Image (cartoon, rainbow, N blue to C red; front, top):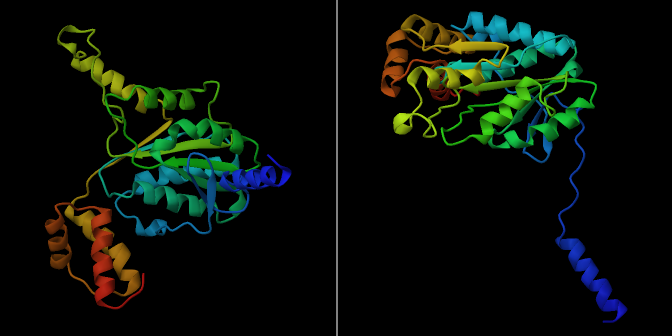
Length: 275
């Protein structure tokens, strides 16, 4: 094999090799998305204003206060936001992050990671631990099946201060539709193969109990639903009435913040308003 052939082979191998991942500038953006191997910056956080999130006043205070502590670099809790679908769990995390960044955008960033990237979080934490900035790592709509024994164990280690626990400048926030984020069945140790119901409940709640701040979100009543619609529609000058808003919710089988926003989106489209 002559020198020219060797050079051409080496060039071909180099072209096939993936380019090296660029280092993330963790000080450059208000938010990031973590893929499990690398992160890309998000130039702006899309979130409603806190005042637009109606019917969750207690939840807002708890999350905003905790994020303000994290942004200030003092003791703050990992957070579990659980409960009814569409009631603003992830929207509240984004909105509260925007509020925490108002005085000093550099003091806090939010990093969203997919639920299937849980095993990569120790790598992410090693990167973030060396940055002079505080971070909220956010996993949306996380649940574990009863057959998944690895995921819950990984999360316990991250929360409980194992050898690869999150550093002092990082806290976890998880949203889920159920407080019991780990459904669990027995492994045959009990007669019939199922855990005693009380033991199963205790075991499934044990993971949720590892969060310092657990905030429940509940389905809203009619008055609250209409207040949410008003919070979105009125600042835009959109005309609407209670009967129309309630019919929209009935057709979708749910009264929630998400349903209210979908109704307001419909109103805005009819009125040729850009959201």
